[in-house]
Image: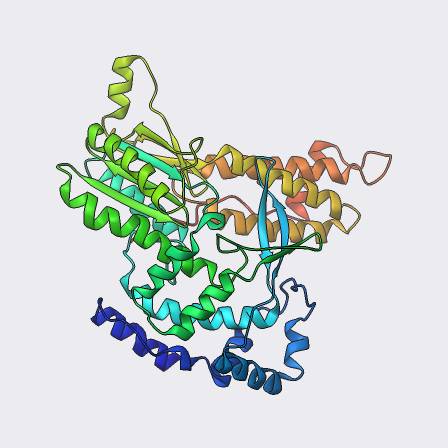
Length: 433
């Protein structure tokens, strides 16, 4: 099956205008069995309560029955179970939890959609794609600002992106490359499956549920046509100065040389988003002066250069040791505080465990944190983060009994000699190729 998908990807890359009219037959028992083997068995269950293990007990019969229903066009996804996940700002993010069989079909669809559309995506699209990462996006953005004529940066975020994707446009975008009615039918039924929340059923008239296996590739297709294709083919060729764009999921940054072109694009962007059922998050979207000359220009006006946040890092204008312009970045205050609160709460939950077990778990968390935030110029921030974690651990270990267990000096000695915490270090160079 991987060979067939690779062949589809090859044809798609070689023939950008090629339309696939007969690929639904790929979803057979063997394909679905492969999908089943790759599925995560620890995910939350849908409204039917069936786990991967439950489904796998009679796997062959279940898959044969599923394929028969797909052929008869009688397969209909069950509603997703809707839960609310807390966000940093006190609001919640809706998460859709699908039944296991529906996840299998979604995984098959995802693989087919990815094979067809992945070759046509621009390099500036970074999120949810194979062999790409947040750090690659940051490197590309760094080059856009430091090595080009960037004087203005538009930092934009789309309000409720996944919840407001227009179903008709999703289908139209997919039909631009896939005309197989079996695939289109499955996509439409998946989008229209509905949700169950507090035992109440609701139709899904728009959006692609966060939690759906297909949502990432659908969001990429949507952003490709709504933003990337439009910018690269319709906007950029008509600009007289430099411009560049980087996109990660629904978060994106656009760089400009000239202010008037940046302002015109910003206004056109708002209208463009509205045409496709989307709108920008005004509080998170800003056009700022940023680049080689921003610091001098701001100094002449008696102000300071503004900063912007992208992928959890606050970007600011600075200089290298030899006085040349540099973009530097540090962990955003919001992400810094949020993670510290999570760790403080986690240590509180673990406080009655053995100290070595608490430290072992903390080291797993810290190493993961440093691998992401341990990036060029951010050493001071991650060292500060580690120090705050040490303080939190000191607080909770002294709360295990009425008598104070450690003084600050004895606590530090204990950590250094018996249970050392992972050291903050830079793992990622922003200038690595």
